[in-house]
Image 1 (cartoon, rainbow, N blue to C red):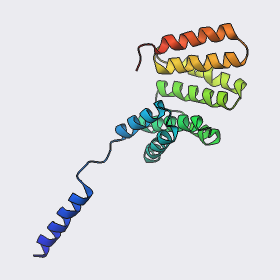
Image 2 (cartoon, one colour; image 1 turned 180 degrees about the vertical axis):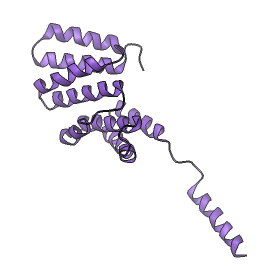
Image 3 (spheres, rainbow, N blue to C red; image 1 turned 135 degrees about the horizontal axis):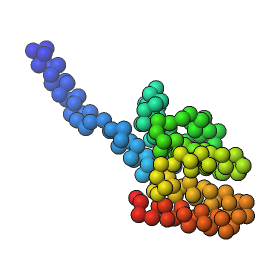
Image 4 (cartoon, helix red, strand yellow; image 1 turned 30 degrees about the vertical axis):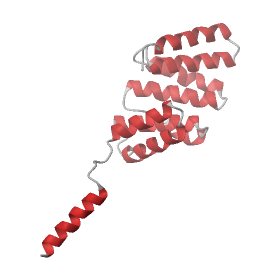
Length: 172
């Protein structure tokens, strides 16, 4: 009799809680990227922060790197540079992630009006970049073009911005 009551209580609890599995980390990352791409940087930050907190004890894992970089990117867009900077001081788990980390560091310096400090990570991003097409290549060229505009190098900036556009054409 007591066992039957326990089964009924457990069954009722499952119905109340629902039988949906927990959201996968890939889904959390994807949702956070979509929020970032539609300029909802606070939502992107919250999702990236939850993922990073869950994975930061495994710093060499690709997931830890991806969540950490997305968290830093969100913080940069929110103007929270001092919080983003330490996240970008740690190496990542792959060459592609390293190029992204260097590009993020260059963007942080650019947004903080530290153009001279942006040049070194921008050069490192270009050197580390695996593919010369796609979003990351476009972002690196875009940062370079913006820095050139800040330094009144209009012709060079135009070339960099054209390269950025060419790099992202056809990418999703």
